[in-house]
Image 1 (cartoon, helix red, strand yellow):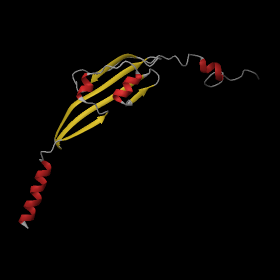
Image 2 (spheres, rainbow, N blue to C red; image 1 turned 90 degrees about the horizontal axis):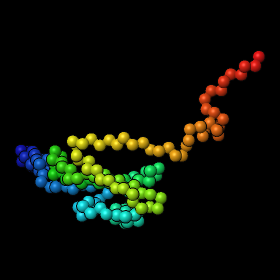
Image 3 (cartoon, one colour; image 1 turned 90 degrees about the vertical axis):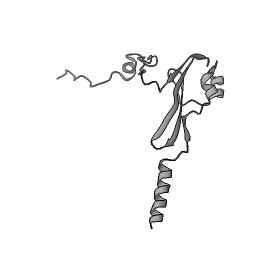
Image 4 (cartoon, rainbow, N blue to C red; image 1 turned 45 degrees about the vertical axis):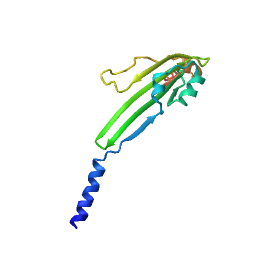
Length: 143
C-alpha cells in the first residue's frame, strides 16, 4: 500500500513540476520574419501574406490582425512571448493608407485612442424628415 501511495505521489509530482514546454498561439499565427517585415501595398498583398483578418471595421475600412504566442512549462510558469495588434487602413481603391502595430505587452503605456467615427451616413434631421418626427405628438388644441 505504501508503494502505491508513493507511486501516485511520484506521478503527481511529475505532472505538477513537469519540464515539458507547450507553445500556444492565439489569433493569427505569424512567424518572426512576418513580424519584422510588414511591407504590404494593397488589400490583395495583405490577405496573401496574413490571411483573413481577425476583425474588419466596415465603416472606417480598417483590417485588424491579432497575434499572441504563449509558452507554458507548467500551470504556474506561463510566459507570453509576444502579443501584437496590427491595424491596416484601406482607401476605396483597396490601397493601404496607413498601418499601425501595437505591442500589447507594453503595460507602461495605456493606449486609448480618442478618435470618433465620422457620421456621414445619417444627417441630423434625416429620420425626422422620413417619419415626420420622433417622440410624443403634441396634444391638439381643438375643443
